[in-house]
Image 1 (tube, rainbow, N blue to C red):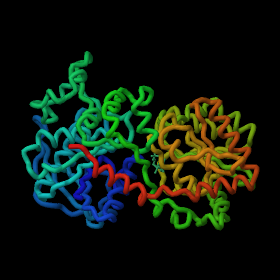
Image 2: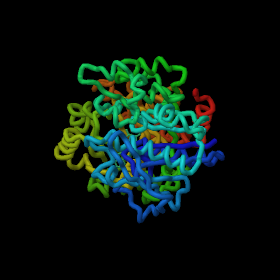
Image 3: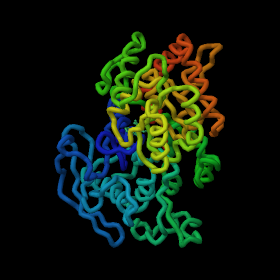
Image 4: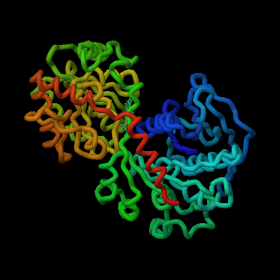
Length: 480
Ligand code: ADP
């Protein structure tokens, strides 16, 4: 199949979370199955073109969105065939990938238009146009209307993957003319355009309405977003299309995340020799300036600091747990100031037990996965989540809330059967979290049970080789 991805993030070029990881990996695995996959993303100013050399492709052209004209150039990656960057400093040379600037909707509409116009120049006829998140939400409708004249796309089917349905791309209805779809106004959701707030356009909603299929990043999340609690207003539309809504758990890139071959950690280890894990624990504590005590468990967190991640539960709870149980806590992340301040206050109150490293550091993320004993992810909701799957592979036992991809990847520990690989709490409250963490800490004191838990997790396989076949099936079954 000829497959085209359009995405606002692609690892390793630019990522803020799981979206970048998925679009960085999935095309590679589709290519291994023989498909021709082309990937389009913006050439953000932050992309290091010295590390990732690129070459211009063809002549510059103009993308017109309403009354706005953007001069764009396409560049291809020298080392990553099939990777296309849309170069337009006016749109993408900003301080961050995402902004609250008034042209935010046009920045990503232009990406989609530039991708389709490049396909026309290349005369590349896609069987599948794979869109991701709100940034590409209007692309299926655009293809069906503004590009319908071009027979190049007559067999093209579209699919939208929702990586997080809380980010929907909602803009005032006054921006309709910027979409180049004003003549197709009747195809926009009427209630939205005439909303009492002056009207709005919800990009993700229109992707759900017009894509040939909708996927999301775990089977449980696919069900959750069809209910009111986590539907964020999109649940009725997802329910209406329930036969085409599919949840596929993200794969893990085990070339990057395996303790046997991880180049970011000082001591490599494997299920048949776990000795390196304890050495990594010492290295982690030393790197963060914490003392090492044998048999004192280390709890790790690597996360965006966002309310989605559920850390507010820790506020009243963590000081009491640290005092009672004497474990250590290593935290890496940045985001909302009140959450950063909370972790800083834990560090101040428990200087030999807690270290909070505020920032983004891939090497430290690897070292925490390898060096911690327990990995904490109390997410309120979690479309897929990758860190709990990395943790399982590193023998770092996850403590998670039963939601989304956490529910699909972590199996609750059963001390009678010795099955399971983590601790899963049902209700998102302090009682649930306390129960799960205290049960994990108590189980840690039983070395035989703990070893079994670690090995159960390390034996699990979330590789892309398996998941890519599920995407192939979705592509084959897309509606027109
Ligand atoms: P989300 O997409 O909601 O942020 P995921 O668990 O799906 O959550 O993916 C997060 C990815 O970003 C993982 O690869 C994780 O290791 C990485 N990550 C998150 N925060 C940091 C950080 N502060 N430093 C390094 N890596 C981080």
